[in-house]
Length: 261
Image 1 (cartoon, one colour):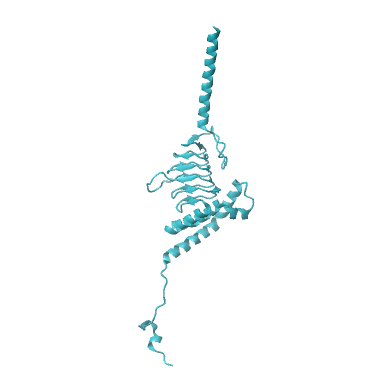
Image 2 (image 1 turned 30 degrees about the horizontal axis):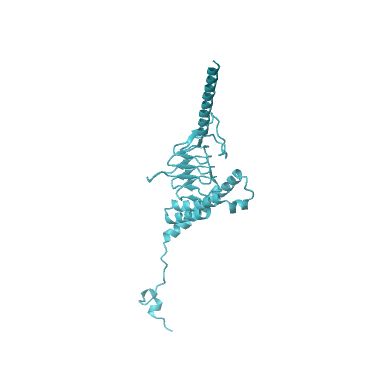
């Protein structure tokens, strides 16, 4: 059979039906794949996941097996999700990283904005209610207990969340607000509200947070004791009570001497 001109040259055939092409954003797919690839490469080179797991074993005596840590620690799950979301955020995507962040929040109860910068060895214990804002920066070997917040104080643009140094311990329910700096090896007591910069190797307790300095003694690199902390308010009340007792004793002595005369 003879082959028609239309069959020999399909491009010139007016009735030729073009194959349908899907209207998919190639750039978004490319950025997603590249972000995940960069994440995997970085994880292999930096041994990031191994360090996070070791941090859990070092600071949580309840951790017994590797499988338990991988399956039952929401803090680790939240960090893995954040690693992916942050890689995509750095590539310029907006919606997809936020969706990953919200999905992580739904699963773990921990909300970490994709723009937050998280150092290695972060241990989020229990984690329910932990919030880390967009411009927050967290150093290495930091420990955060449940209910803690690294938040902002207003609607201003730019840097508006805390910067946390290395080896810091943030106690249960502590609130660190604004673009302040928490020095390395500092301890933030449970329930404290911190609004000002905190020097290194110090402890902050109370509402608002008050700094307690340990007579020149440096805090160990990772000191997880965030319960047995000084209470300056209680100490002041004790001093006032002692003064009242001394005055009462002097008054009673004066009354006894007056009666004796």
